Length: 162
Image (tube, rainbow, N blue to C red; front, side):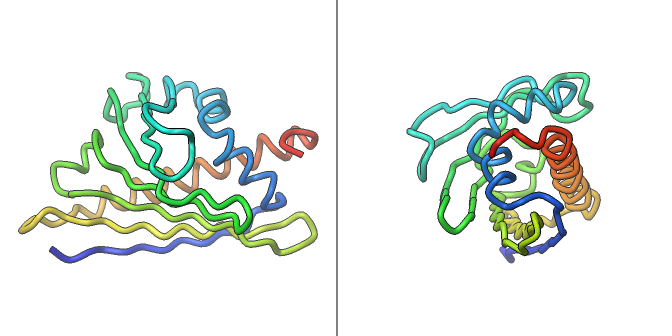
């Protein structure tokens, strides 16, 4: 079972603290509001919101994505260093081929109200199975699309998450 890793990095014209607060700290509330056609709800199943917390995402049927629940565990929530690491543990169609998927997102300050978002994704396939490239590309496209919408919201609402 070989772990497959992918890395993405993109410049965001929003300060990292605002983006971190919007996407990570208040993501359960803001994300379904910004993407109601995709997300029905996001909530905490168990825990206090810190490491070890189990969260659930429920997709809307009209999203075209796998409907139902997707569970993930927060592994790292570091508000001082702007690092967020979660492990997808149940519910994605990927689970036909993987044991888990780990996402680590770091937000690096560039000054002048800009930051760099770095996303590291680890796929842990089930023994003897391989991942389809289209699954991986779909995840990458979804991640970039999510941040584009989040950034557009923050730029249109300059007082939000200050």
